Image 1 (cartoon, rainbow, N blue to C red):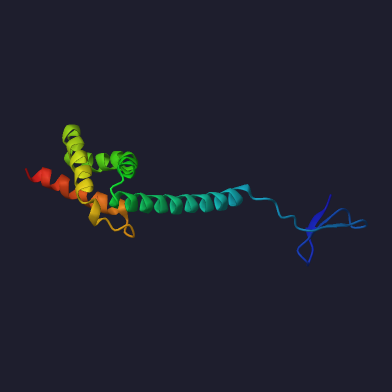
Image 2 (cartoon, one colour):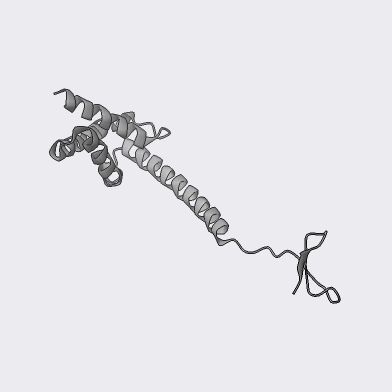
Length: 135
C-alpha cells in the first residue's frame, strides 16, 4: 500500500487508482492533560493552605490555643529538621523546637496575619539554633 503526504497536510493511502484522503488525527495527550490538572490542583491547595495558615495566625493573635496547637502540629517537624541540619544533635534540636514555639506563644500579639507565618517561624528557629551553636 502506498502512503504519501498531500499538499493540504493530510495523508493519502492506497494505490494510484483509488486514493483515500485521511486528515491528521490529533491524539489525546494524557500527559499534557494530567500535568495541567495537577498544576491547577496544586496551586489551589497551596492557596488554600496559605489562607488557612493566615487564618490560624490571626486566631493565634487573638489567644486561640487551638490555632496554636494546629500550627504546632503543622510546622514542628519542619522546624526540627531545619534545626537538626545545623545543630546535628537530636536532643538539642528538640529543645530548640520547644523554645521556638514558646517564643511564638509569647510573641503571638505581634503576629501580622498578612505576613508569611512560616517565614517568621523559620527566622525564629534559625536565630535560636545559631544562639545554641554559640554556647
